[in-house]
Picture 1 (cartoon, rainbow, N blue to C red):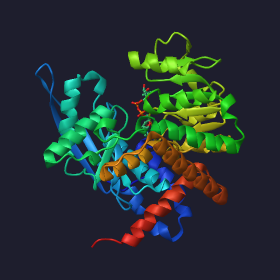
Picture 2 (cartoon, helix red, strand yellow):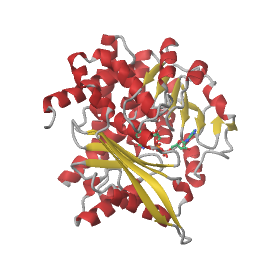
Picture 3 (tube, rainbow, N blue to C red):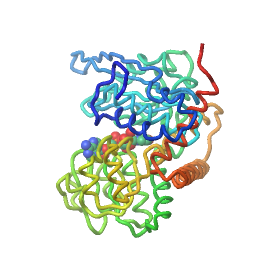
Length: 423
Ligand code: NAD
């Protein structure tokens, strides 16, 4: 599967999913395929040890990573994940998907990602701050506003980005807001960043739904994951009039045929940290989430959720991938055979990195845009990207995922070819 000595052969791993996605686009790349190995060889990976003094005086060690997958088109860009299941291979896949995503959107970035193998919900506020600052110092030689710019992902947020920005700035002796994106607005963050990923899911989803003849305003929607991406996506579908009939998080699955009250569920989630216990819906078995009839399904939790088995059971017409890597390759094949369209992650959830790009530009120019300007530019970039991919899919007679990879990989490999190899 891969000649990299540090890769294990788990065919359900995120890295393995990525490799299969690349394999599928290779026949479409013509002469550029000469450079294709660059897509399967991450440029740089750092593993760091993070010793942390706990509030009770004991010391624990956590493993952290930063991977720069490809920098051919610009500095590395990609989030930082704090989650107990984070591994080097997962971070490699997430960094590679960032390379493809930035190229698919034509943003001037390469792909990177970071992570710490930790359950942040078990840490106190102070422990989380110390962990974040030590991790930032450990990866400090790799990141920078011109080198590699982290952002939030699962388990991290604007506060974590503020600590990362402060730590890096203290270490170099100058406040450098552009070293991370997804910061609080009063610290050089961008208006519209918090909702950007969910907004991109909604915009690209509506665009494809219209092409498929799905009336979103009267559709039945299901959302897996009710965090930053899932809850904002649900909010926007709900605001348009769609019925969000099912929502699942790591603790519960809710179902209500007449449509959930999404603002009320968001308020509940913010107070309780989960959707579990929300009284105005039925709590159903987790596996039943995959078998109900929907028009639109938004996986917005973690990788590998749509397995072959679930792909056979699904009763929906359109999947919009809010999460990174939620669909396994064999499930992709089944969905294609069953005529279920998939808006791939590298387009659907690219709203976040697009507004991160705006944030980075604003930090460099120290001139900030209105939320209206941000949203207009975001919508226009997302609509252009999905239209380009739709036309490519039509021209090549391939899925939207393979078309998105074709658009992106052509850009990445052209940059590689024209830069040439050094020395
Ligand atoms: P988050 O931490 O805010 O929320 C994650 C949600 O997933 C939570 O509701 C959690 O309960 C749920 N979840 C976790 N494990 C689950 C499981 N086994 N079953 C069901 N639900 C589960 O994270 P987020 O920022 O919303 O990110 C979600 C996904 O979107 C990830 O794949 C992430 O990489 C991707 N993504 C995020 C952004 C962003 O801007 N935040 C951008 C692009 C892609």
